[in-house]
Length: 205
Image (cartoon, rainbow, N blue to C red; front, side, top):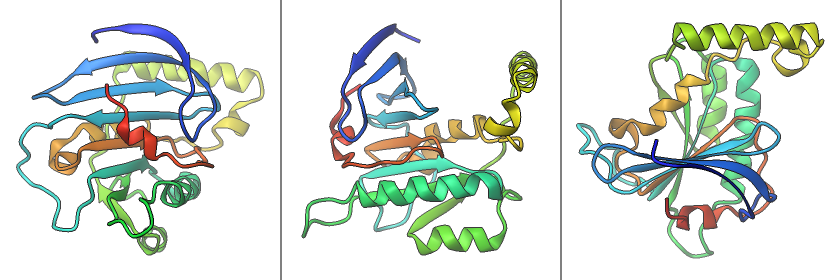
């Protein structure tokens, strides 16, 4: 963690956001930028040259990747809408070669084959990764938050079933999966994109 500050700015394709900027210098020259958005939306841009990957995606890979996660059918619904809206608003100029890949992170037993086919039919690459559990301290804090929401009568509204994918998103930093991309855009599964997001890929950390 190199710096932390509060800033309000306009992001193309999204409303003005009040966000906390956190910079992290990782392996090689790769950098990660995270911003918290209103309405439970967040995104991460990974840029720079990633560490050398043992495995690289096959030919035909785009320069950029848009990623979200879903560990069960309930959250797959939102993830499908998120990736579809991203697909509609990330296309390059007419006549240009496709340069954006859509990727869904899930766990081996997370989604039935019927849901995987829905994502693939949309052109999404379904990437199986290992589940990432919370530490004892984080799990305790999350339990307190759930208890608070239950007392306020909001738990069934905001989290009717356990999500389980919050820490799955750390795989967006995995050079074995995403090391071949120039930038990776990580979206929460409750984001609906309404305008072009091409300018996000031009941001520098």
